[in-house]
Amino acid sequence: MKHISMTVNGDQHELLVDTSWTLLETLRDHLRLTGTKEGCSNGNCGACTVMINGRTANSCLVLAAEMDGNEITTIEGIATQGKLNAVQEAFIKDGALQCGFCTPGFIISTTALLQRDPNPSEVEIRTRLAGNLCRCTGYDKIVMAVEDAAAMLRG
Image (cartoon, rainbow, N blue to C red; front, side, top):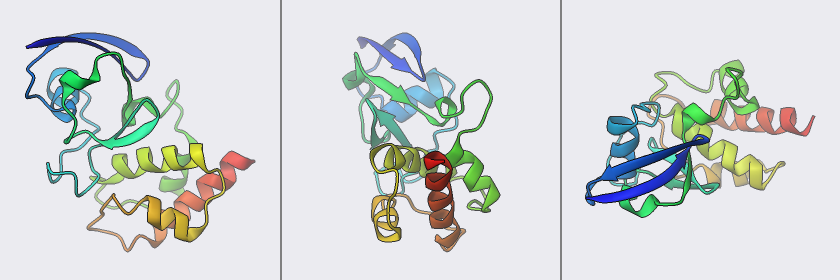
């Protein structure tokens, strides 16, 4: 067991974690933040995508014991004061989700993408979101939602 201190969605957490626990397991099972989904457990689907210090990561591949002193953002931390952000709004408006299982990972990845590049091309969007898989859509509505979110954020 290891004692860690990490900030999750702006809240400080002191935890005693087993050194084998993944960040995903810690978020879902110990902090009860169930928006981050477990899909493949091997880093291939992107359903468990979170931001660690502003950079995306598959939380199924990261050990919680390594997160001491880090800042984690999950899907629960994207909306502010109960108001959806532009990415969430665009995903709803454009119907960029069906079953919704992959949606948290796509929203986290899109948010990180637009923070780094507020005006990505379609090719850049498809390339940057390639680590997120959806088994329900054809991705076109997801790309449209990213483009619309970028336009909303640019004003």
